[in-house]
Length: 278
Image (tube, rainbow, N blue to C red):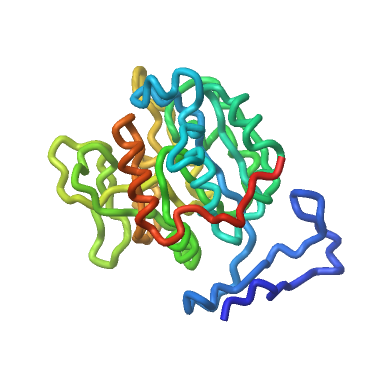
């Protein structure tokens, strides 16, 4: 049975949550997945600074995260998939960031929400660095590019850190994962011309503070890829690969109806009880 009310407090510490409310930080046990581990509250970082050039003309008057799919902005679908353990949302914005701020406000899907601006479009690695000083312990990283699967994210929380992956028919367009026999990351090849497999990085990662020393600025004319930092960290410690049951990349206008169709074929494409609180 899922014990959503299994709360452990600390009256002596006097600590308070990021939204000013009293602790606890331990919020529930994931017994519905037979994990049995205590899951600590954590932050989710949503990287939403990109211009979405491939989605033009849809992104000429709005940022990519606010492009609608099945009647809701892409960003709403992502936020609706967040695990219950997430107690704060951090949005890294850039292109038309004020539009995202106006849509999400200071309390998005029932969670306190903060914003950091990525001033230069220098890659998702540097986007995460923008929010580094606000991040504590381990945290979930999501790209505001794709539709994702909430239950898969929830299951992934049994790991200390992990890389969410899926198979794709065009792996050359993504970061291709080379796996060790034990199911951990051996290496990641960013958009290789001849992919050695069809197992690719999705738009979700569970990370901790260990990632930051491995995030390097991109070379002149190149972006800083977070996947390269993950590959570097994987050479120092095991990073499990967690399967994403549902993942739908949204990169071009023709992907919109396909993504909407994929949502309507799922049992719960959007949580009707989830709402935007401004």
